Length: 449
Image (cartoon, rainbow, N blue to C red; front, top):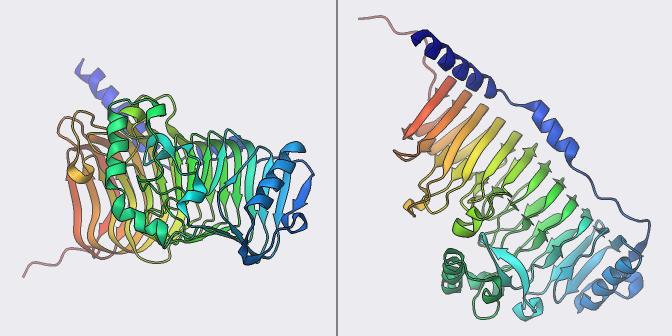
């Protein structure tokens, strides 16, 4: 009986050890399953519809007309030529449309909150509610894209930025409604609540492409992929440094490829989410899953974050071949707390180069020390081939709970060349380290004197 038990433990250990290798075949299968959008041949140039790229004229009606013409023709491409096109209000997508912003073109949104009424169904920090329309909004669409070499400017640095100091009451009300299971009809925000809209939000959409564009000056999160699937984001760049300017937020999202992105934004570069607290746990059938992040340049607050709103669960995340181009607070950050529940599992991070960070790899189940009753399950997280020049604070942090330990963590070929605190690990089990160097590498032992 003793030998049988030993055999099972050995098999379990070997299986876990094998899983630490980066699963390229799984990544390939996810990417192969993602469908790029397909568009009819119909095209409309907004300049020919009367749009003026003079940075002053309001082109809202022209963009609405272009979208209506595409709907009438069952889709098409809206071409935005060189110029600065002011729009006093949101762009609302229909299916089968490519918004192509050409080189030298900029769409510049107004910063008057009244322009983003009436309210639309959206989500704010993990809670479903009605709020100001995102500046570019697609609901229930398929085969949609934003492409080209032009720029989208959200004008987020003035009026919208001032909302941050006033949002507390509205934010807390939204969370109370989440916890108390208030009906959606009751969750009406907008004027007087100061919850900023996202720059771009694709909600309940599929077959999405965002390629080549530049995102600047967002009011809030830059690109929110909400309850959507089959998504490709590639070759885009950022210069958006306002409050909470997350670069890309997949939330309840499935089959996502993020590649060749140059980040420079005022919060997380990629923040994978899956709803908050009671509402998120009620949506456990739709976790965020099958997300590939590769060949990106990180600059901002954190590189890749999982959480903290992740109550429906996050699984099958693959981060590979990325590096920083400046300071990050944290390189890879997994965060949740005892209000969330849910799970984070099957995360693979490989071939990452970080320059200077505060903390290199950080996993915590006790984010902000908040919450009770709904501890999250964090397991099967694998780091390999990571080099960090300097960590001002900690190299590797793992923080579980005594009765809900973080488990099955592998660290293979990790080098953190300069660091204040090497490793802080508590309430973790089955943590395997191989070829891990923190601080100066040891050589042969010195002889006795």
